Image (cartoon, rainbow, N blue to C red; front, top):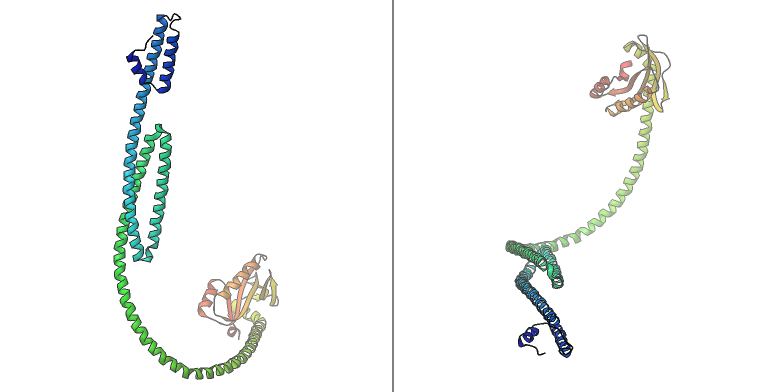
Length: 368
């Protein structure tokens, strides 16, 4: 059985592997044609060939669609490549401007570092785009989404470049202003150098005078040593004097207390109607040392006298100390407490504060 020209032309459009299989099939049919091939079987064979041809057409159509999609992808990628070229050109321009900026002022190093970091981020982003592109080639189904992401990233890059360009303009404006200041500083430096020359001349004269003063300084140093020895001796004498004064102060305080022990009972009775029942003594109550402690009575009511003696009542801190002791004693005794302060002299303001706090202040001249 011979093969028709139309059928042969159709087979030429079939894929090589499929075409070889069909030719082998036809050869087998030709060899077995004598073995009574029925019309039905031949028609089935034609149907198979027709189905294969239709499948091939669908395959070719699908391939054409894929080729068209690939073309669109390549066009989009070319657009991205062109945009990238423009980006690289812009980056080169910015790099050149940056070099000029670095040469004009070292103080802009911080801005340069920021631009360098931005460049690194751009390069990292470009590497990410390249990796995404590789994955895009392997995954055609998700290509459109990836391309849109790359386009958005490119827009952000271009926006960032515009921001950097604007910042560069501002930097150059600041550089112009700084250049003027540098010129002013240069003029000031010239004036400073002239002044330094004048000072250097004056310094020479000063050094000549210092040479003559050096001898006097040595003499003063010797005199200072002698003075320090005398001051050390005076310091030792002053320390001894302070110790003597401290001892004298304590003696005067004890003398005031001893006089108060004798004078207070009669004075309290005549001036305030307070009858001292026990001898006034120095006592330790509630872990507090009291200069005066005694039981007393006024208008038939029992009292406990507690108090302190000071040579001069000239600040309220002494009243505060007595109040703290009063609180501790009150915590362990139920009787009413009568706080008193015995002194040689009390300042009027402090005396008023004591009266407001209910503290009886007795000055030594009062009982004479």
